[in-house]
Image 1 (spheres, rainbow, N blue to C red):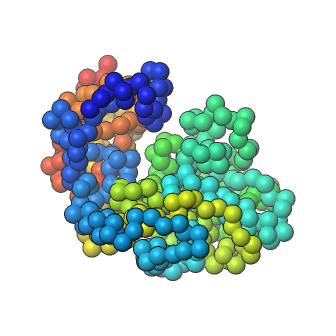
Image 2: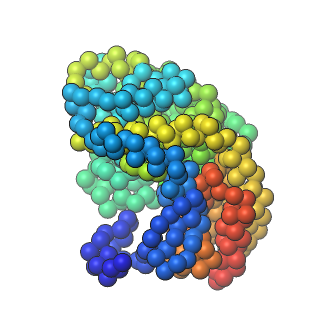
Image 3: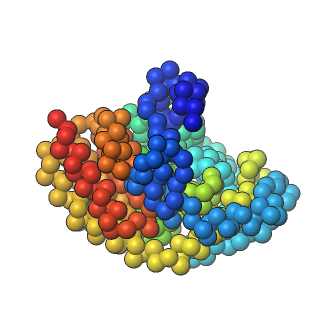
Length: 419
């Protein structure tokens, strides 16, 4: 493998091309393991950025791709349709108890957020609400790296502050301060209520990540917050968008995070685990009143919209998830993370430990030296990618107890080397 070419010419995420970080060449992947070209096997604690919930090289998903290739790999969705897209739409509507009426297939999570924002804006404009020009969202949120998505990411602590002058200005309030299991007080939603009351005539929609704020800080918060927000959005007639790109398909212990609160958004974005990590695909789902309120053409249409290969493997991934006992697996992972990660809160380098579903988070006192930490974990046979001051785990749901223990033990050993 020509690593010199990679280092000189291939831009990796969130790096400088002129001064790239170390990369590890992967030769193959199977189950929860990445096989490096050098021969080492690494347990993937990240599910390849949270999407490979079934692990790698799964025979059911391989077969779905292979069978679809025999008929067609792609066909434009403009003026044409196909069985994989129809079946996937049916699956998604069934999974969400038919609460949604429209499904728009996009090609990445960031694009799904763009679509959701445009959909909400067009709905408002066609209702004669043309004075509405801004979105309301939380600090410490993350919704992707395209321009619309960047504009509703945290403008101060997020990754996009260099582009602030190019972005539309939206409204931000403090992220929820009520832990997932904390006692609920109405004061937790007071700032949100005040913002909505004062500015609802200017707000197109509220957009945020339900229950778990992902790349903005891995914060977990109370389902009661979702209930309060849903009621306030209804009271002030403001659309509600949930970004479930990271939380969808079981990661938090419910199939979708909004189901912790038994509320339904007006628009929802899905991605990442939608195809089991096999292909890029996202979906934007909207309720009937949104469908009914958009009477002219919705001007968005990615070239690879509803790609048949992606739709077919998504169908297979959903069927595999539903038949795999995923809830028991996520509960098993959660219990083990509670046993093995929570004691690390006593470590002097650790500020806090949080666990929810198949997510474990160590919030460190200081920012993590990512390259050093990764190198130590690779030596231990684990793949993990911290960011900022966070070391977090999102393992595939198929991980065995011994494999998960190896990850947590390796983290503990590495923490002891932090000076």
